[in-house]
Each structure stands twice: as structure tokens, then as C-alpha cells.
Length: 228
Image 1 (spheres, rainbow, N blue to C red):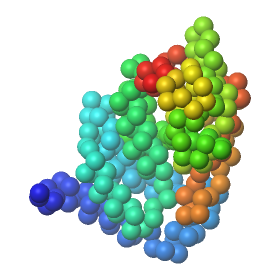
Image 2 (tube, rainbow, N blue to C red):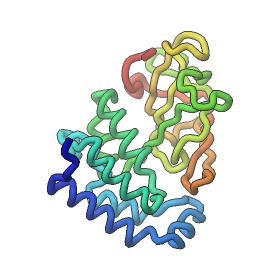
Image 3 (cartoon, helix red, strand yellow):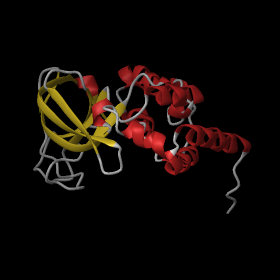
Image 4 (cartoon, one colour):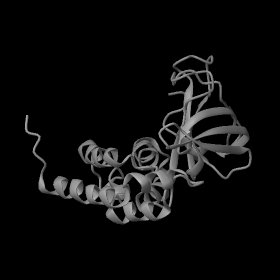
């Protein structure tokens, strides 16, 4: 098996490596982690200009249409500096989920925003008391005439306090621990009833506790098939 990088991959590794070397000296990271936001808007803009945030966005939606190898190269470089910006939550998880299963009417807007850095997403799936069981979902999504009403709590959502859009799992059928009956929703973090409280984790990354209290969303906010 040949693990030699092609020219474009090596260029990506080099440019991200230089960014980390320049911006993530140990004391600089420690000072950045201690700020209220916990990461840098300037760094985020730089990553957008470098095209890093567009890697997992399809080309027909303004991205680079790259894959796991390119993501691995970025993460390898980021690991050397323990980079604090919300790359994984937005430019990997958010980009991939929306590209694969987002509502067609919203894909263009959302993916373009992820690619240029103007939209940040966070995955809100874990719940208090459920540990890391993705099927243990007590959050409910009650259907209405034109959408759903969400009620519940999510815990330790990576970079949830900086997200413009929360990708929330909620139960639309079945019992609390059933594998079937869970639906994913794209929830605007500014909607009435959404409460987000952020705090630093042990590694300095930001996480958040999220409360959804009667949050009304539209049918087009469903990500992927209902109950699946």
C-alpha cells in the first residue's frame, strides 16, 4: 500500500502545518483557551481563506469536495498544536451531515456558509445520564401542521456555544432507548426556547449544555429520513 502524498495533499499538509507552527506556540494556546470564547475569530478567518473549512463541502455547493485523507492531514497538523477552533464540529461533522442528508431547499445556503466560515455548526446528540449512548434519546420532537416542537436537554456538545446551527437528535417514535425512532434536526441556535451554556473541557476545548424548551422548527429543518 502506497502512503506517499500526492502534490496537492503535501501542499495542504505544509500550509496547515505552517499555520499551526506560527499561531499555536504553547503559551499562545494557553492564553487563547483562557478567553471567554476559547478560540480565535482571526484564526477562523485564516482557515476559511486557506480553504480548510471548505474541504468537506461538495464542489457544487462552493466547496473543495475533498475526502478523509485531506481531513486526516488537517487533523494531524491540528493535533500538534491542539488547535481550539471548531473545525471538527462545523467543517467535518456539520459539512458531511448536511451534504449527505440536509433538506435540498437549504443545502446551498448552509454549505456555502460552512465553506466560507460564516456559519458554524455543532452536533447535539449526547444527553445527561446517557453517557455516550447515541440511541438513549429523551429529547422529543412533537409534530405540528408545518413542522415540529422540540423539548429536551443535550450535554457536552462540542463547540455548542459558538454554533449558529445545532444538529439535534430527537425522538419522533419509540421508547427512550430504541434504536429506531430518532430524527436529526437543524436548529437555529437563536430560536426562542434554545438555551446554550458553554464551558471549557479538560483539554481547553469548548463544550456546552443545551436546553430546548418548546422550540418550533419547520419541516425543512429535518436532516435525513424521519425516525432513522
